[in-house]
Length: 273
Image (tube, rainbow, N blue to C red; front, side, top):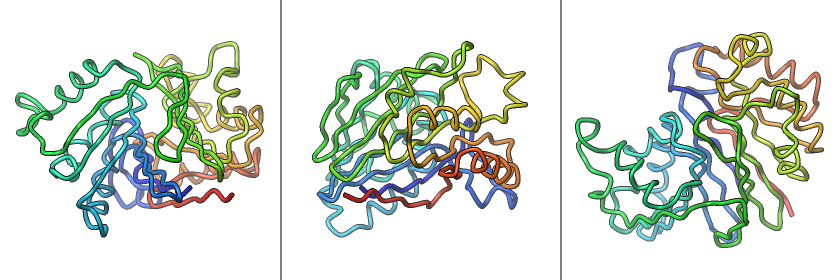
């Protein structure tokens, strides 16, 4: 599989000279199989640049896209109105959230309606379908997708995407239980090649932010150890954290777990069979 990150910032997009290394776009990643299947994880502001690239590809006149939505907080869907394939009559887009299809359509229409946006979601030219994701695996082409509920206000879902070459787990927007480790999530992550974790807070910041639904780089390290994964990717960085602070978190995480590093816009990874 080929994996690319288009946005790794949480809460809200940011800009500035001190936030260029990791980028300021909110969550979006793409995962492609050798067979040509593509899955997009979340529709934060990073999806805009992804959409522009998709429209320029040879054969873009036959776009079939699959978007996994972890939840409906704004930072994870705010890029959708600016996703170029949404307006292309030759694009077929399937949305996969942990909600029934009518609820999904209601949420996405709410984002693009009234005084919020000049084009209604239903009026965009693409063909749109909504499919509820549950914990049972589903197949998209050669990719197998499974989900795991996360501890986040109003709920959230983590996703594991796998094919014969390997697997990656996206599990941001989650908080460890008061008792310690989230054993359900550790079991879900176990055996993956890459684990993308929530690193919104430092351990010191978390002391005053319990209940906000986010984690620290140290929580990610503990989960990665328990799950036995080789590669840990810190993500969902706070808009308050400049590049130097993210550098520090990545350095501390790597000291505790050699396979740790920080995700960033433009980072590309590959699983090999």
